[in-house]
Image (cartoon, rainbow, N blue to C red):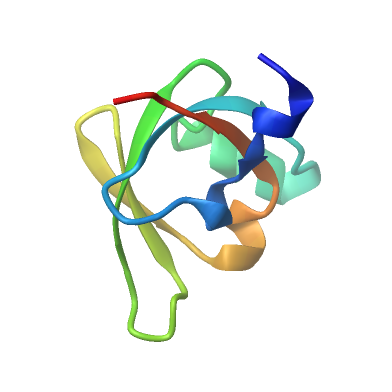
Length: 82
């Protein structure tokens, strides 16, 4: 995988699947994100967005999680092919 293939979680489209590569959040935000299961290697699916595109809802480990776009910007993913 090339670095050019990675993107922030915010850039994914609805129904798009991706695998988490890195979480760049630090401090309390980084801890909270990781505690919710958003860790490298986990597969996610974007299942929806609010009317103004913020927040984004993702499906992760059989539960739904919503993140604000400013939180999603710290999460880097690589899209899955199917």
